[in-house]
Length: 299
Image (cartoon, rainbow, N blue to C red):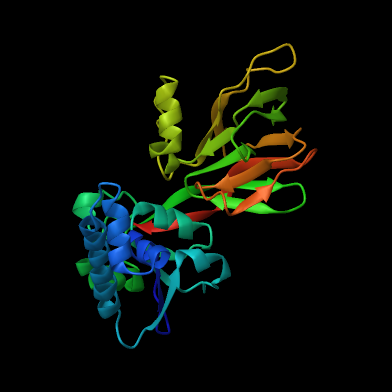
């Protein structure tokens, strides 16, 4: 990406466990006492807080003084307006990259981990000390950016959810959900614990746990133009079928789910249940490959 004006670097972070504990209990000492009553020490969460603080300071210092900059907390992402020329830096674990991905439209992302050796962060493998060099690579167009496939769910009223790892369709409580599922010319009524549609990135998370439980390892590259869907715990009965319980979705393919739930039907992505769509009776959601891709700096 070669910019004609000074780029804007947007740094995305989330509050640390330590900050949340102090906010909840009022003071450090009260937070320490709370943890001690449960056999835990505040030292570990305080150390992680310090590493996060140091990483953010290092990243900030690495941004050229003539460049524009902004910062946004994870909880404010849905209210932040990204510019098409932004360079996005996440400072935290891999999940933060997934959190920000659905709000982007092709902006390059650099995932920084406060402790990459310990975290083993797949999406955030870079150290804060490398920020200056990584920003230079992105700004000059020499960065190795990988386009990771994303998944979308689109309701028949136009509402949409986008996710990097996976999308869940089912009941909010994960209890039995009733619906009609359609893939191509095949369809059946099902009752299950919900439908999960995963990308290659998500194949190392929820999708992996489902595939291993079924004894069928999921081989799906993060940039592969395909998805995999799983129906969780489909219940066989004279009314409900179990034929359409998993499969690959290629470019142009779509999986449709028509809700038969009186209440509690939801759609959410990447485990963020608070950011969800309501799937009411008779509503149809179509799941497939999203036109957007996450452009992530990788080695």
